Image 1 (cartoon, one colour):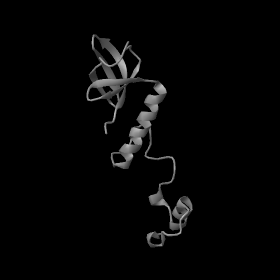
Image 2 (cartoon, rainbow, N blue to C red; image 1 turned 180 degrees about the vertical axis):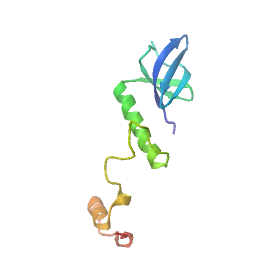
Image 3 (cartoon, rainbow, N blue to C red; image 1 turned 90 degrees about the horizontal axis):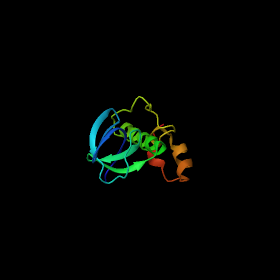
Image 4 (cartoon, rainbow, N blue to C red; image 1 turned 45 degrees about the vertical axis):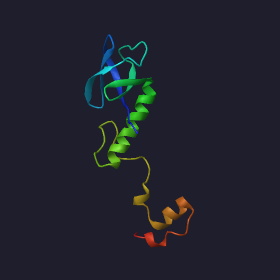
Length: 112
């Protein structure tokens, strides 16, 4: 599986764009994208733009990448705090997990 990084076009030259996103800048190939313009958002993988995306989609992908960074212990970006926005099952007591799963077979998991 590959993970694309949303990056915004800062400038364009034939076959390439200078882009910025997630605290870095890159020069990426744009042969797969038609009519690249400054301000446009691109989904970038391995220094090539793979898809033109909307600003809303870029924000969704960035939020997902922030959650992934928190999950693997790398923190989050300043724009997205270390909060998933909901209680994680690992923070729930047994009865809350049973209600969530509608199961009564989790008796060995009780820790709180």
